[in-house]
Structure formats: structure tokens, C-alpha cells
Image (cartoon, one colour):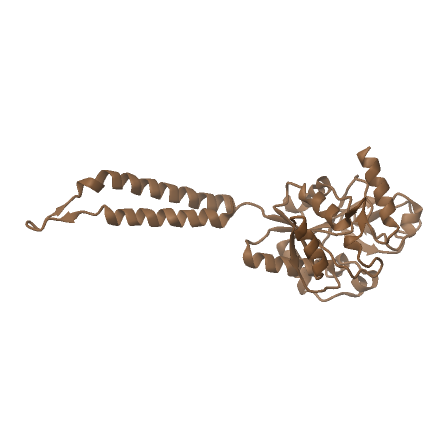
Length: 312
């Protein structure tokens, strides 16, 4: 049950107890001037007062200790129609279903997420998501998905409670699984990081040379050193690619929003470089789950084949 419901119930019960007390007060004898208990209400009223105070205390305890100490985690899927490499990508169909629906339905299966929202500046996407009973929020247009997510969370928190962790699930990851989201969340849940990011092994030389595949190198502790669309590191075996499932603590997400765009962020067109350049650690988490993002139209056939293999 939502925290504000527990709080509301506790207030109702406390008010009921006080009201009951006012009806069970002693009456004053008109002739003697002595206070006399009202026999009709004394015992029953006392029972009601105790009952209402008990229920009020129980509800307040649930609010304070249950709701206040719970970790609230939300998934947010940023989408926009104006992709430079694949215009209209969110509504492009994969096995007859728009890609945004694949991402949303797969993310919804993750039990760690309290809610999953799609955010977009495009009414076509908002209308489609709401037509399949999804939750969506209209945003402004941003160059960076992380800025778009922060904007959406600000508006959600106006109507709801504050979220502790926000998982950005990029809308071009139709093969996302609940397990992948849980893997990415672990460093934040354990208090080891404020931002984490999945990465997967690069399987082929073709992917290594593909500028749509974002490569990443880490330090010995597993924190990101650099993200690039170029082949890095040079002269070594196939490395790792970024998988855009990125949990932020609330503070880290809004910190990202306050930082100005950075040189390498703009050069590589990678959100995480804004954090790396500002000395904010991004914990990279390896996943063994085979995945493939949709960056250009030809990727849809690749994803459809992978989906067919997983179903067989």
C-alpha cells in the first residue's frame, strides 16, 4: 500500500479517537454540580478510543517504518521519433509489435521496479503507450536521454513520492530482460556506486568496428575510463560494449542534469562521458546475456532472429 494511504488512515483513526473522547466525556449533574459519568458511553466509548488509537498507531508505524525505509526504484524508458540514424524508431515494428512495446513489456517483468514509465516529447509515442495501458509522461526535447529522464522524474515526483533509484532503460534495447536490470542494480543496492551501467562482450570484429556500437574500457576496479564509438582498446582482443541499462541514484541523476555538456560527451555522443569527465564514477557491470540494440533499420532483422532463437 502507498505510504500516503497509511498516513491518511492513521490521521483518520486519530481524529476518530479524539471525536469519540468528546462523546464519552462526563456529564454534569444540574442539581449537585458534580460531574457524573454517562453510563451509556463510558465502557463502549473507552473501547472505541483504545481501538481507534491502536489502529492509528499501527497505520502510522507502517507509514514511518515500512514506507519510509523502503527503496523506491522506478524504470524510465526515454523515447523520441527524431532519431538521426533511424527516424521513427520507437514505433518501428519487430515481429509485428512496435519496439517501444517490447522494451516496456520486458522491463515491466522486473520485480525490482516499482513502476515503469515511457517518457517522450512526441505525442505519437505517448498515445501508443497509453493505448496498451502503459504509463507515459510527455517531456521536452533533449539531446541527452539522461536529461530527458531527469525532467520526467521531476514531474513524476510532483505527484508521487521521491524515488531512490531511477533505472534508465534505453528504448533501443528490445532484448532487455528482468535479469539484466537486476544485474545493473546490484552496485547501487549494495551502496557501492551511485551510477552503474551494463556492458557485454563484443562478439565480432564487425561490431568492434561499427560506430553504432559504443565501446568501453574500465580501470582495475571496474569503473569506466572512457566510452567511444571507435575501436578501443587498440591492439588487444575484442573488448566490451555498452548496454544502455543505466541505474542512477536520485542524487546522481539530478547532478547529471546540473552539469553542462562536456567535450568528449559531445564528441562521442555518449551521456556517461559527462559523468566520467566530471570525476563521477560509473560502475560497469558485466552481463552474459546476449543482446543487440537497434540503431539502424537493418538491426531489426538481427533482433528478430535473436528473438526467434530464444523462443525455440
